[in-house]
Length: 446
Image (cartoon, rainbow, N blue to C red; front, top):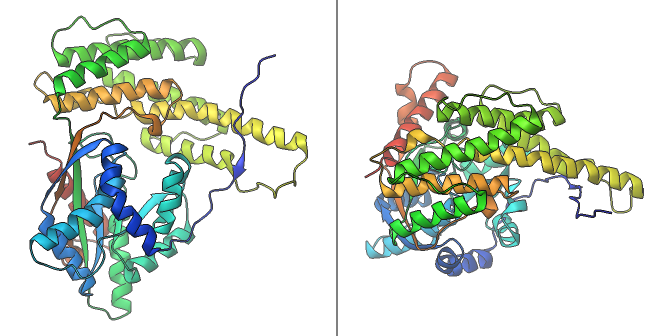
């Protein structure tokens, strides 16, 4: 009889009240450089525009401003890099400039409740104890919103969040953004005005770029060989790196199309169809599988569908109706676990769509930089990872990377909003366009 380890149902993703424990922060600050090198594979951190960060923090601690740090979420490495920026780079730069910021280099990070389940035990211990604030994407999360609003106007540290909402896997292309950053700034302004406080509300744009400077030619070849070996694809016949990636993309798409045509009734499509159209069609087919199982009405945007399926899946894996220990009969427990098992397998299709959506052939071209080609190759390799049952936590990440952190001048929300015509909703949208424009400017390849 075949036996296998089953995925078990667990209790719901509860709201964890943020708290700040000084010794945990001190430990995090001490180990941050070693963690970046040994765990994240980042050997060098370069900063540009650090004076803007120093000035913004000084104004925050002088109680002249409230501060939101809006960072590009290009990589899974961004949160530990931002921690390093605040707790190491910021105070070190202030000392070099013989300036004081007036308090700790730290921030209240907004994080998805599900992060603690895949980020590992260390993160699960650390994040709630350094005053991180949990949120739920695409869900009316009143408790989180009340907490964020309180911390916006009275928190001990600035708020740090990613307008993209999740990793976008591109150094030089901003992913779809949500309006939350601008909405939080407006909330903060309204609360300060209600309390007759005259602080500014500043939004500081930050972008992290990951550079592969250590033998990039060998790294590119190594990633291509990984894809070929793990996926069982024929070696690319092309000679240029760009054409090699296009051939690999076509071969991988053909393999996935054959799979979904055979087992999930995807209608065959001519191979002459443009690559991006084939990718979007495959994403839609992959998402249709869990949507049918979970009885979800498909939305228009692919990324919205990914978020919705993920959240609905977590509702089945992390059950709000999970009873106390001993409160279930053995058969009832097995049936609850069986649903979790089924949902877990259906979420593998969502994992594929989540990564495949970011394989964008127009991001590269015959004259693309080698670093950009490596980015694309890593995304292709991650598609193979997701097909093999992996997720963001098992994504391949080369060692000896350089991260370049670019920091722009802060946006004064109180000065920008009156210049935007329309009612409150239009002003929030206009402020968000300003934030997006600044992040796009920071993301330009140099």
